[in-house]
Amino acid sequence: QFKTQVTAHPIGGCPMADDASDGVVDSFGRIFRGKSGNSIYPGLYVADGSIIPTSLGVNPSLTISALAFRVASHIQQNLE
Image (cartoon, rainbow, N blue to C red):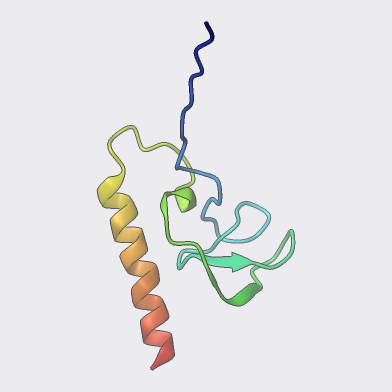
């Protein structure tokens, strides 16, 4: 009888950084274009726990919610 253990790691897959050399998205969840610099793909965002660069050591649900709200607010402000 085999048992399978599955874990999910929702943090850090697309880390936030100042530019593409250190991360995948900027502080508004916009995805960097290329491997360096801060050019972005217009209209392409990540708004979940994967943008948190490292484990927080506490339940991250409020931090994830706040970051998603920040990304959504930025999108809304730039549509108007």
